[in-house]
Length: 257
Image (cartoon, rainbow, N blue to C red; front, side, top):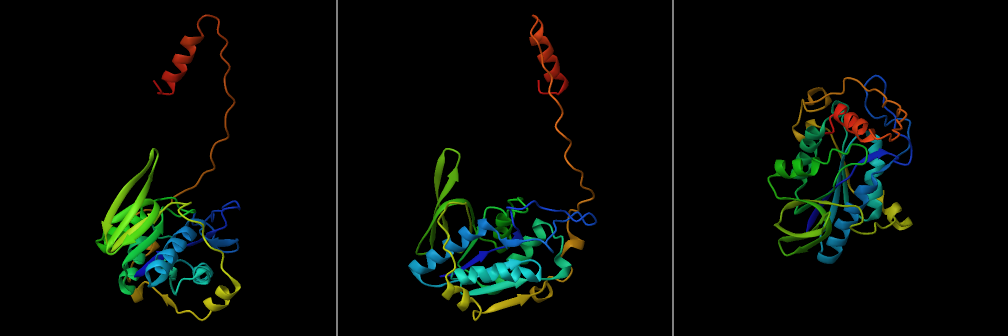
């Protein structure tokens, strides 16, 4: 089985994120960066599948050159191969461009199953996994709490507010996993040392036949960023027999009722 896991390097979520005042994009240079914690569950899910059924895990990432560290961590965890798409032209790409780039790299590599997190911790769009599936023309199974493969059938328990649904799809497919689907392993010293000798491809958008794709051609742009207003002091309503009316008038003014 050939499993491809999408990973991303992000600013450490334990620190306060910063925006570039000129581009309004998240600062990624000069800040502490890590492999997105949500992606670790995807890497672990892929490793468990190939350990049980044979095959290998390839991790693919799009980002700046220093994103190679996130790929190497996944390799140290046990992935067999890494791919980093790094291109200045892709800076500021929207979700659809990101999905197009990742899908092109995945198609080029070949796959039976693509595993992603439900969303990135620094973006929270939550749409890239489904976009990748559409671009690859394969089923998308989302919010997986468990992941199993029986022959050519993907079996998933999908997380819901009331519990979970049982979902099946025919491979090849894309599945997004939730946090808590497993317990990601820590890279061992042997794994860290071995990661240095594992194959690692560096690609550009041109290598994928996507010349012209990137931030400049994104379908959306950030034109301004303003700090959230300070929370205003509340109002105290003393019930003198007409308190209910004052509350109703206030809710009507706010268009709540």
